[in-house]
Structure formats: C-alpha cells, structure tokens
Image 1: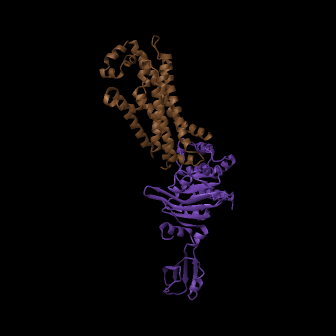
Image 2: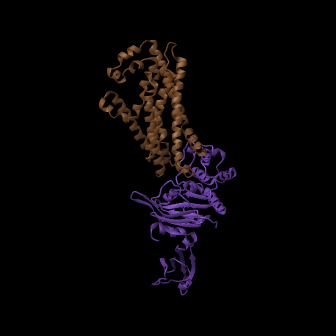
Amino acid sequence: MPSGPPAISISGLTKRYGKLLAVDHLNLEVQRGEIFGFLGLNGAGKTTTIRILLDLLRPTSGSAAIFGHDCQSDSLQARSSVGYLPGEMGVYSDLTGRELLLFLERLGGGAVSRKHRDSLFERFELNDRELSRKLREYSTGMKRKLGLIQAFQGDPPLLILDEPTEGLDPLMQEAFYDLLAEARDRGRTVFMSSHVLHEVERVCDRIAVLRKGEVVLLSSVEDARKLAPRRVRVEFHQDVGVPATLPEGYEMTVAKPRTWSLRVTGTLGGLPSFLAALPVADIAVEEARLEDVLVQYYRGAAA
Amino acid sequence: MTALYALVVQSLRRVRKFLLASGLLLAGFQVVLILQANSIQASNSFAKMGELMPSFAREMMGPSFVMFLTFKGIVCLGYFHPIVMGALVSVSVALATTPVLEIESGFIDLVLARPLARHWIVTRSILVAVIATAYLLGMMALGTWLGLSRFAAKNAAWPSVKLVGSLAINLGFLMLCWAAIAMAIGCACRRRGSAGAIAGLLALTAYLTDYVGRAWKPADSIAWLSPFRYYTPFQFVMGGDVPAKSLYVLGGVSMAAFAIAYLLYSRRDISR
C-alpha cells in the first residue's frame, strides 16, 4: 500500500441545515489505492459528505482532509488531486462536449494527456461527431459518459464519483468497471457512492453504509458478505418433522414434510451434524449476497 | 490567470449573441433619434414641442428644459431615456446574477471541484459586467457618431464628444452600481429568479424615488438614497462636467457591494 496520509480522512464531521442533521459526527478513512463504496438510502448524507470534501459545503463541525490537506483551510491543494463526477451534472447546453472538456481542463487540476483522453473517448464510444454536438442534444447516458471522461481525463490520484453508473447502459457500465480496475492498478483511489449493490460488491474493496448521517457499517466487502445469512435448501427422501429447536443462527423459512428452507447466519460448520440423523436427499446452498446485509442496514434492522 | 481567462471567455461566449443584439439595438436607437431630431429641426418644431410640454415637466427639468428641446438634446435622449436605462440596468442585473445561476444549474459544481478559489467566480462576473458595460456604451457612442456623420443635417449643432463621453461615463458607473448590488443580492440567494426580482424591484423603487423626488419635496429628502440621483444627464446637456461626487458615490456603492458579494460567495454553501 502506498505510504503517506490517507486519501480521505474524515473526523467528527457534522453538517446541520437548521433542524435537519444531514451528517452526524462522521469518522472515516479511505486508504490510498482502494475503491471505497459509500452507501446509503437517499438523504442518508452521502452527497453532503462528498460536497464537504470538495469545499462546496462548509461543515457545521469536524473536519475532512484529502491526502492530508484540509478540505476547507487548504482546499485548493486538496482539490488539486481530485477528479469529481457529480450526481446530477449541470452543464450549459450551448457548449459542445469537446468544449466542456477543454474548458474544465483549462481550470486546472493537472495536465491532460491527449492520448489518455482519446483512450477514454474510445472506451466510452464518443466519436468526433458526438463530441462536436451541443450538450442539449446529448442523452442522459451520453452526459454521464462525458462526466466520467472529465473526471478521469486528468488521471487524478483520487476520484470522487457520485452515482457513476446512473443512466449508463450495461456495455458502458462494463467499460466503467474496467476503467476502475485499471485506475486501481495504477494506484488511484476511488471514493464512490452507489445504489447499485451488485456493482458495489463487484468493484469495491471496502464500504461504509450511512444511515441518517451516521456510519452504521464500515467493513471490507468480504467481511460484510460474511454477515449475510445464507439460504440453505434441504430435500429429504421421506417425510420429516420440524425440530422443536434450531441451532443458533438458524431460521426455518419454509418447512414442508420433504423440503426445508433455512436462513443460516454465520458459518455452515454445524450444518452436517444438524442434518446427520435425517434422511437428506439433496442440499443446495446459495452464496451469501452483500445486498442482503446492506438492505438490513438500510432498514435499520442491523447495526 | 489561465483559469480566470477561461472563465471570462466562457461567460462572454455564452452571452455573445445577446450582447451583440443589444449593442446593435442600442446603436440603432441612437441613429433613429438622430433621424428624429433631423426631422424636428427641418420642420422647426422644437419651439412647438416646448409649448406642448406640461408645466410640471418644465419645472422638473428646470433650465435644462430649453437645452433638451434642441437637436443636441434629442440626440442625447438615448443616454437617459427610461427604456434605455431600464434595459441597461436589466442587462447589468442579468450578468451580475450569473454566479447564482451557476449554482442553481449545478454547473459550478464541476468548476469548483477544480483547484479554483471561489473569489475567481466573483472576479470573473465583475470583469464580464465591466466588459459588457463598456461594449454597450461603446455601441451607443458608435451609433451616435455614425448617425451624426451620416444623417445629421448640415446646420445641426452636434453634441460634443465631451458631452457624449460624460453621459456614457456616468451611465456606465450607474450600470456597474446596479451590477454590484445585484451580485451582492445574488450571492445571498439560492435562485437567480429571486435575485433578479429583488434587484429589479429595488432598481424600480430607486428610479421612482429619484423621479418623484424631483417634483415632490418630501420624496426628495430620501432621494439621495437612490443611485439614479447620481446620474445627472440634464446637467451635462447644459454644459456641466461629470460631478466627481456622483462618480465617487456610484463607485463607492459599487465597491462596497462587490466586496459584500465576495464575502457572501466565499462563505456560502454551494447548493441548489
């Protein structure tokens, strides 16, 4: 892992809008070189946190830093390392795609390699003709592709992406995942919010789940997945009765004379001994899904 | 500086058609006024116009009334006609509220996510307002010159360069003053519509206060609060110089309002 201060360091961050507490004493560290998923329902405080990192919003209390540079007192230095994709990209519709990219390049944030940008055009299938069109003629997906290109074009050390695949078709989503993997291979850090849980499971190293402005889960994707109950389906040769008690972490969801469906939280180590005395014909175990864990945290059933 | 240049160019590029059309319209209006003045002079109607003018209007205008009803006075009307002044102030307000429009549209998120200090956004808007003001007044002056050189009757008494220059300079300061006030209001608002409406209403109130104050003593006691009080075209038509006090007041208000805009913009949350 590269040395130096964390890519993002958030300490006691609070943002209040009048009576509404948008972010509540948030503490978080994102290490260099990782892809970090920032999750939560709408209004959980994800975008507010991202906007504080970019100094667009000022925190009520607490602090945030990017590569050791405070996001408020040293915000120019902090932002010089960032490529940002907003959740809703507001653009002037009378600009062409190419003009927007050149304009943003001139505002600073690192030299843009023409070769790198051309490879992004190719990857996201934006040709010269499309880049010369006014943005008013762009579809939602095309605007999103342009947004990703402007965020990646300077090859910044940190990418902050708010709902990056919103509006992208499946092929472009794949192109984006490849791009993320390459960025990680080059040691870039990615901090992304997303509602697409299978996407998070696929690309992220670690995740934080935010609920009502508070972090309720901070974990590696692998560890979080272990928290998910697994569905086990057992079929029997002959009718069996339902046991009066189940081992800890087991929950019977379907109990028919020849079929049981169980939800097992934790390891499956005890399953063979539990079933040993029964006439088992077949066992099917579904892989644990991160989605099952996250939904619980979203709902507030876990934590 | 590259970033500031990019911001200014981008902003001017956005409003170029609007500015071009406004400039042509204002220049055209100057030409029309000159044609009008020609026609009045040709029919020897200046005296008749004076007789038709109601007495309260004569009182309001004072001795400048005589000067106004001349070829020179009619030509200069374009620099203080209420519609022209209203249009120029509206342009100033529209340009000065660009920062809040960018917040409302979300465009500024992309801009300020770059390593760019917030004060450059306000500086950019001030520069654009100054450039637009100079351009529009320049087009008016060009229209005056073209109209006079092409269409003025040979025996017509042209307004002097000093007179046109004084009108343009004082009017320019007035436009910048309203740009600064609108920018300060915009930097405290979440919506451009709100900022524009407040600034527009304030400008109308100030104009009416000044206007009524010229004829009604009680209103005159508060008319000093109106920036329009510091634009005195009739004095120039009478041959007076631009009063330094007017420029100091308008310039001072502009500087103060721009400073407030910088402060508000640097401290506010950038959110829709």
